[in-house]
Length: 319
Image (cartoon, rainbow, N blue to C red; front, side, top):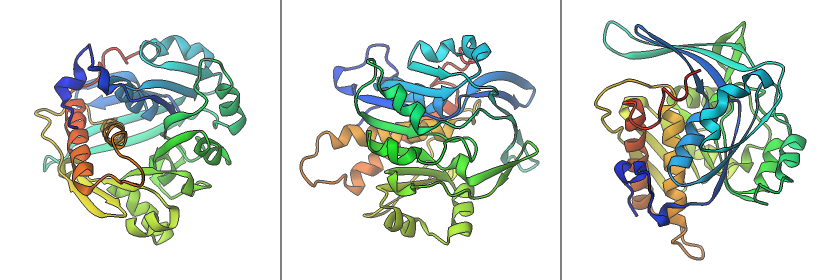
C-alpha cells in the first residue's frame, strides 16, 4: 500500500491510515537554530520531529521526557497533537545548531550542547505506564537519545517488554559532549539487542564500526535487529536487513529550508509505512525487499517535504 505525502497531509485522513499506539522517549530539546541570516529558537529532538511526524501519519502518540517546569508552557504545540507527560528536571536539554554552506556549496552543521536534562529511568517509565490513559503495551516505541546518558541503564529491556516494535536513532550514543562541544564517540548502551529497527547517519555508523568492528551485517546478526538504516544525506542511504541491502535515493526537496530533524522525520515515516504493511501479513511472512523499498521511497518523500519546510509547522514550534 503506497501513501503519498499529499494524502498523508490531508486534514481528514482515510480511516485505514490509523496505525495504533506509539510512544516517543528522549529529551525534548530547546534548540537555537542558525541558518544563514536566520536565527530562531525552536523545540527539537526526535521527540518533536519523530513524534509529530508519527501523529501526522496516523498514530496515537504519547510522549515522555524530562523538562524543567518553567518551560512547560513552551510545549503547547506538542500537546495539541500528542499526549505528553513532562517530568520536572533541574536542567533542560539545549542545543545550538548552525547550518552553513562551504565554498563548494556543500552543507555543514555545527552543534554545541549547553545543558542536558536528567536521564529517564525504568521506574519513571513504569510509573507512567500505570496511568489509566496509557495502553498496556505500545505497538511501537521510538527512542531518540540526544546525549549518551539520556536513558539510564536497564531501560531498554523494560521497553522491549512493552512494545511490539522498538526503534532507536543511534545519534545520542555515537557522540560525547566535552565542554559543550559535540564529538564522535561510541558510548555502547546496555541491551542493544532489545531493538528492532536502528537508524544512524554514515558518520555515526562509522563511529560505531570503528569502536566495535561491526559491519551493518554483523550488527544485524549479533543484535538480532530487523534492519539498520544508514542515511547519507542528499545521496539517500541504504537499509540493511537479513534479506540483503536495499538502497534508497533522497527525494528532491525543491528548496532547503530546514535540515535539522530530517533524519527523525525519515525514520518515523519509514517505520510507520513498514508497520502498516505488516498488518496485511500473516504467519511467518516477512516484508519483501520490494515492499521495504517502497517504504523507503515514501519516507524519502516525507523527509524532502520536511527539508522544504512543507511537512511540520516550524513556526508553531518556535518559543
